[in-house]
Amino acid sequence: MDSKLLTFRSNYYYSNYGSGGSGLIDISGAPRVLMQNEIFNYNGDTSKEVISAYSITSQTLINVMKFGSGDISMQNVINGITLPASSTLLKSLVRIKRSSYLLVQSLRA
Image 1 (tube, rainbow, N blue to C red):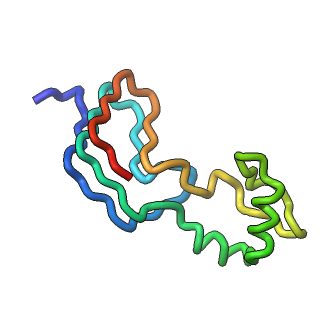
Image 2 (image 1 turned 60 degrees about the horizontal axis):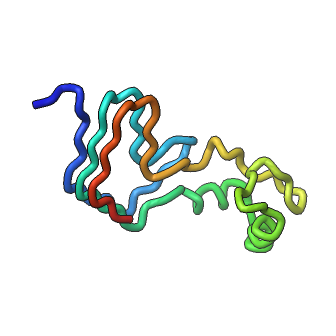
Image 3 (image 1 turned 90 degrees about the vertical axis):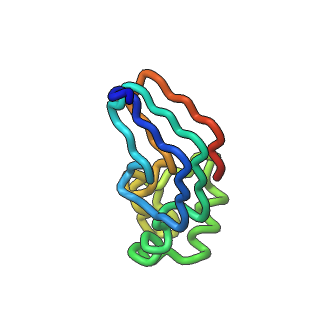
């Protein structure tokens, strides 16, 4: 057993949601990470809650998409509604920081 290797093997992530500016799986400072046969289905941001908390209408979302330049800045004010800061949204499904080695084998999303 290698104590400096963090291993994820044959996990199935289904209908998980996150926010708070982190990843669904958020790893920081693991020397080496191995991900084998990981499956992600129907995971994502808690956007339904964010939309209802900020009273964002579908027209506002359409305007955000029109004015966005590839990477939509959630700091913009659209139609007089301040959208939530990007720090409150999910960054990614898997977020790895300060790791010296990552091996991914068969990751499906």
